[in-house]
Length: 458
Ligand code: AMP
Ligand code: ZN
Picture (cartoon, rainbow, N blue to C red):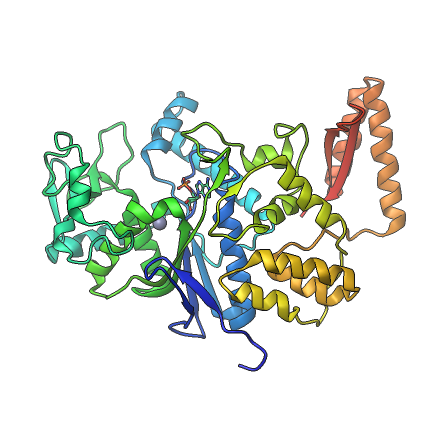
C-alpha cells in the first residue's frame, strides 16, 4: 500500500508487538468491553474509551470509514445495579428501579464519551437485549461437556479446556492454591465460573432451560461479540484489569462454544490511570467522575474541557500507567491553546503522526509531531493529523458579530446575578440555551470572581 504505514500492535496473547493483518480488510472488527451502568464513569474508565477511539480512527483511516466495525457493549445486568436500584428507588418496582438506574447511567456515559471527543462505536449493544444469545451459548457449552449445573448455577468447567489460562499465563493449579474452597464446594474446580445463576423473586431474571435466572458477567461479551463480529474477529480490547478473569473466561466460553483456535487475534489492554501510584477505582474511593471534571468544580476548583482531558490521556503511551494530576491537565491545556482551530479540507495527515500511531498507537510521539506541525503553519495538514487523535481544538461555528452579541448577553447575566436578580439572569440563560448556547459558570482561581464561559451545544 503506497504511503500507508504498516500497522503494528502489541498483543497480550503473544506478549509481542507484531504486524496487524485483518481477517477481512473490507470489514475490520473490534470489540471493547464497555461500562457496567450502575454509577457514573470515572476518569480511569475514560482511558479505554479514548485509547480505543484513537485505534478506531486509525483503522478507519487505514481501511476506509465503512470498513471497520467497532462494538462496545453496555453491561446493564449486574448485581451492583440491583443493589443501586434498591437503594436509590425504593418506591419503584424492581424492574422500573433497575431501568431508572441503567438509563440514567447509560445516557451520562454516552454524553461523557462524546464530550471526550469519541466517535460513536458502530454498535453499542446492551446485555439485556442479548439474553437469548447467551442462553444459546450456554446450551452449546453444556452439550459439548464444557459446562455443568450445580447448586442453582451453570458453571464453566475450566478443566475441560486444555488451554485455559493462555491469555493471563496462569495455570489452574496456581488458581486452586488461592481459592476459598469452602465457599466453592459446589464447583468441580475452584476456578470454574458462573455462566448462569438462578434468581430470587427480588432479583431480575429471565426464563431459561435451567429456570428463571440471570447471566454471569463474562458470558455477555461472548454473546455480543459473536452476534455482531462473528466467532473469530480481529481485535479485542479493555483495561489491564480485564485480562483475568474476564477476558480469559470470554475466550474459554467463545472458543469452546464455537470450536475455534482463538476468539480474537489481537488482545489489547490499556494501563491504569492512577492516583498516587494506586489504580483509580470505585472500591478504592480515589476516583473523580468524568461528569464532575467536565461540569463541576470538584477537581482543583474548576471545570475541565473534554479535549483537555483527552489530550492529557494521550500524552502517555496507552500501555503505561498515568498518574492523574492537575499539572498534567494544565500541560495539555497549554498545548491546546497553542494549536490552531482549522478544517482539514482535503489534506492528508502528516506522515510522522501517522507512522507514530501505526507503531502500536504511539500517541506520545504523535502529540509531539502534532505540536511541531502546529508551529509549521500548515493548518490543514495539522487539522487532518489532529483528527486522527480526535484532539482538534474547538472552532466555534459562529461569526464575530454573533459572538460579540452573545458575550454581551452573558455579561448582562453576570451583572444580574451580582444584583441577585436571579429570575432575569435565569431567563437569559434559558433563552441562550434554547438558541443552542450553553453557559458554564466558574470561578477565576486568581481573583475568586465569578466567570462564565459559553459554547455551542453539540
Ligand atoms: P468497569 O466498569 O470497572 O468494568 O471498567 C470499565 C473499563 O474501564 C474497563 O475496560 C476497565 O479495564 C477500565 N478501567 C477501570 N479502571 C481503570 C483505571 N483506573 N485506569 C484505566 N482503565 C480502567
Ligand atoms: Zn467483556
